[in-house]
Amino acid sequence: MKGGDDAKVLAGGQSLIPLLKLRLASPTRLVDINGIPGLEYIRESGGYLRMGALTRMADLEASDLIMKRYPIIHDASVEIADPTVRNLGTVGGNISHGDPANDLPAIMLALEAEFVAEGGSGSRTMKAEGFFVDTFTTALNHNEILTEIRVPMASPRSGGSYLKLEKRIGDFAIAGSAVQLSLNSRGECERLGVGLTAVGPTAIKAKKAEEALKGKKLTDEGAIRRVGELAAEAASPTTDLRGPADYKKEMVKVLTIRSLKRAYQRAQRGGM
Amino acid sequence: MEGGKTKMHIAVTLNGKKYDADVEPRLLLVHFIRENLGLTGTHIGCDTSNCGACTVLVDGKAVKSCTVLAVQTNGKEVLTVEGLAKGGKLHPIQEGFWEKHGLQCGFCTPGMMMAAYALLQKNPSPSEEEIRRGISGNLCRCTGYVKIVESIQYAADKMMMAERKMEVPAK
Ligand SMILES: Cc1cc2nc3c(=O)[nH]c(=O)nc-3n(C[C@H](O)[C@H](O)[C@H](O)COP(=O)(O)OP(=O)(O)OC[C@H]3O[C@@H](n4cnc5c(N)ncnc54)[C@H](O)[C@@H]3O)c2cc1C
Ligand code: FES
Ligand code: FES
Image 1 (tube, helix red, strand yellow):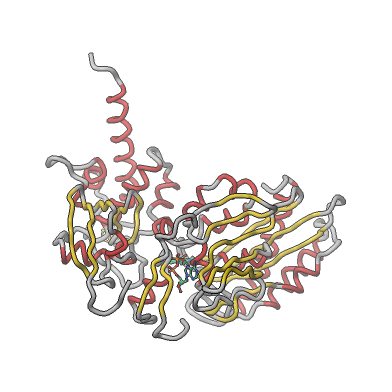
Image 2 (tube, rainbow over the protein chains, first blue to last red; image 1 turned 90 degrees about the vertical axis):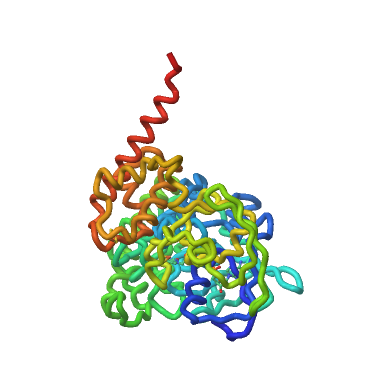
């Protein structure tokens, strides 16, 4: 948490209140943004899937649009924390918190999302890449709040998948891998997005892995394996209660390969 | 919300009864319920928002009352375990825990029952898998969950039956 004495935005409170209880954060003021109207929505318009920052994670889980067209987000929505936490926790909070163990940041990196922030001096749009600066630190300025999360609209030959390994239901990830794939008309990889959870100081965009498959067929087992290996190389996990670092790296490889295969199946079915 | 000693006024409807109070902004909902209102059915089992012993409903949604500030419930409706029984008659969920031995020490039980209540409101006939997912924010250190799942199944059946009876026109 940046500076102990500043005001803090309170959204779902499911990360912030636990920090306050443990005295890991002690802001002098909390600004409850739940009263701001019009920040809870999920819709497609103007070429984007748009989610208001105060959209609850339970609403992601319940959304038909998300389930049918953005399965990568649906995958996460049923695995983030537990249903009680998801009733309050917000999409904006999950992203603004800057916790590498949160699940949505890696997905936003894979989807090449954009974030809209409003501050004293107006509004600006940031790319997900570059937004996650360090653990608990994002590109948001202190006087800004995140208002909208935008994801380029899913194209017909695209599919995504998020896989997360957890010790028990409801826990943070040991490791997680988000994969978003677009195919060209010949069935080759046109674009690949790979984001990793809980294996570094921030969520990680595995760029070399993303490049490795360009123009290749998804039937090329060697190429798929290579994506997994490059994703593991991009990870820099630490050894902790959730497992040793080398194990987590290996899991990144396995999860990325599985996630890629599932994303491919879904892309062939038109996203679902 | 101002820190320090400034109190804020809240008006909350809890188990159908209106309460007005001046509380510190930092007061957690669970402390408000237990200490200010003296309703100790809602338990505190952890410091980390993990166990769900403190689960209550706010405007119909299950939340961990140790991870909500009391001031955030201003103008809202809260339901705690004390609000389940009506007119001295146990709620089918309570009856289910009784009949199916859904508790041993009972510490997790109020939270379990409130999570089950919220689940059955959304999904009146959940599968075992859906029940297990539905209560995944609630930890029990005694039962191994099998009996809890059975208790909730019992309640679901009982509530469905009550519903059907109401649909049958009176003779
Ligand atoms: C038991 C438990 C298990 C959990 N497991 C997982 C898990 O497996 N995966 C996972 O991803 N998360 C998990 N979480 C975290 C949960 O998903 C949080 O709800 C979420 O990360 C934060 O969202 P929030 O709305 O509650 O944010 P808050 O707690 O309100 O805020 C978090 C931070 O973000 C800032 N913030 C919030 N909204 C905005 C905004 N719009 N603009 C600017 N800043 C903002 C706040 O100032 C604060 O610093 C878990 C939480 C608990 C309690
Ligand atoms: S007391 Fe454990 S989750 Fe609230
Ligand atoms: S009955 Fe003892 S914790 Fe559940």
